[in-house]
Length: 105
Image (cartoon, rainbow, N blue to C red; front, top):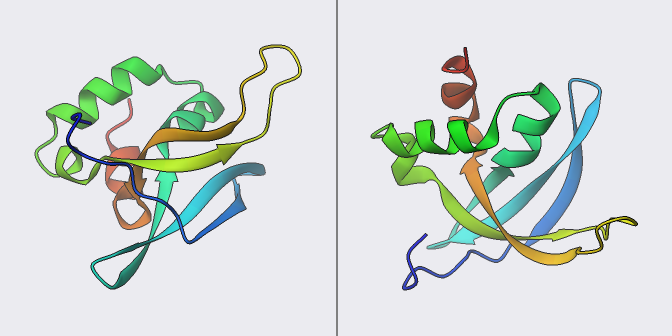
């Protein structure tokens, strides 16, 4: 995300079930249209795939790279590492999630 691009702010945030685990989904309004976005890194962690490799792969893809965007997602503080609160997270629209998942080897 370039410095000129601002992160999208969700209208709503929910935990949804993804193969018996929970992931965050956020509802974002852009140009009068509502769209669901899903953070990619937590899905990589759940699937046991390397996040940096997947991030590079998404950026090489002509379609996915145009859809990857930063969204402000509120995370729960980790008791060990701290953190938590609003974080800008790399997300794909839900409609493009399958396209990304099909490319994982």
